[in-house]
Length: 344
Image (cartoon, rainbow, N blue to C red):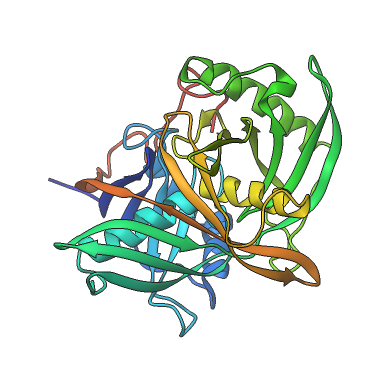
């Protein structure tokens, strides 16, 4: 069996969203911080992402996390998130997958009933509180990076949809949030394709007019995601709502999207709709759930910000070694528009 690459991966998903974890066969990229390593991969080493995410090894529904040694001495490890078109600074579902894999694989020691981990992401340090029993990770609560509002009720004109109002917030990437009712869509599985099409059109209209930058991280690619929001209702005394986050080139986050939910909490807190310490149940299009909470009020470069927590579960789905035959005519994979909104 000939191969020019042998990449070891532990497959996982968090509340439905695939977050595979690369545990071997890839050397850490150059860089003095995990963000610098992420930037190098994006600019110089993107072949790794394309090889794994494109067919025949992956697909638009997959995300991949590269484990690297932490550069910050406060962290036990670092990870870099690779998505179908992007390298977001932080991801809630991927952090839950990474924490689960690091502990259940033995890469980091597990302590029962609770293991505390600090991990370095391109967006900064995050803390994972992992509930553990019988050698398993039963639940992970990730305290996210600081999240803030860039703009509330920002007008954007979208062809065929008219003028819409969106909240532009940072939750680990820049999200445009808008009520699903404003575009006449319910967040149910049978509307998935329509949600993707509308979300991509809104994103394109926003990106043509707005390019927010992070006051500390700098340019991280502008508006990356559009999230349609369901109405907030009370269930057993807890505020609860669904959402659907559109991930380019054409898929919906199968989980409740921890960073989108963090961005939503930032907007809610800015409007006085939720307070520090109050739980918020965020529900996905599949019906899976993250329990959210504002853990701390803080600042990002003098801007009011929050640090929310994202609590959910992950499950390991398999162990894989991905190979590349040196004679393979598709050394970086391939994609067609029959499985995505557009090529990636």
